[in-house]
Image 1 (spheres, helix red, strand yellow):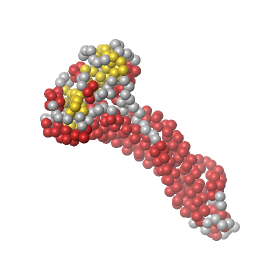
Image 2 (tube, helix red, strand yellow):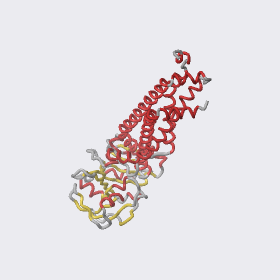
Image 3 (spheres, helix red, strand yellow):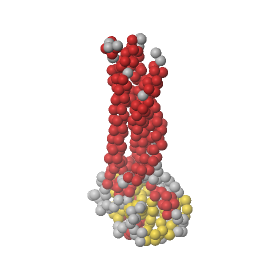
Image 4 (tube, helix red, strand yellow):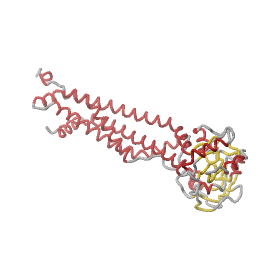
Length: 391
């Protein structure tokens, strides 16, 4: 008995039902591709922006909770707690610290709500901490009203070195003295200012968001962290860059949960659709299955037939869903960026890959085959005598 040929014929006989079943599998597979791509992409972007590309190993902050510290350090959230500039000499003298960067980071939304700008007050110590922080045009600050723009901000503002920018929230005019090379990190979207200017703008003179540290030997991170904790005044905390990124991902946890619930719902609908479709097919074809058994079809043949039908439907739905998922993943990533409040990476927040494609394919098809098990067993247990006794 040609199982594949029979399975294809049976699918053609109930095209609409097979299409609706494949559609449910397609939605489940597409949802899984999108969610896994966004989940991995966001985690990789946060890790890249806050750990790999910064050159920072430790942060000194007044925020002991990594999630709160993430809000202050990564997104410019204003906190009533602040780091005093007086501790800088003590930190500089700590053995094993190669460079430090005191900074002030804050964000301001335009009056019309159309955009939120991030400002970062820095010193020239950034060159020792961030060798990759390089200028494409212009140079360092010339006076307190100077600004260095990230690549994206220069493009958005449509300015060049020497042009002036008006900051509506602060009613101040700045002169562009430099534009950074594009780094595909959060730096691309920041206004860099002299530290003292940034502090004055929000009435935080002498107060810092945090101090970033670079170590000579990363293997001594725990040792130096403990030493600093012992030297710092009460109320100060030492956080690793990895703890900071984990704090950001803590903000993302609720969104992540919702996304995976969506995957669960999509697969639940798919499971219901497959079982319902195959059971109806078995009920409608009792007589046909009985005749097949009468002409020599074994129980295993019937099992193979129902399984083959399900496999073909699920395979078609899964492949279509994977293609759809890959197409809409960038769109979903762009939409999610508008909803993120904890931290928005500068680069892409989606990361599809062959592993995600294969996982989605295997999971979708495997789910379909498991769902076909009960209808297949029911079909294979049909007794021809009972079905045909009235003929």
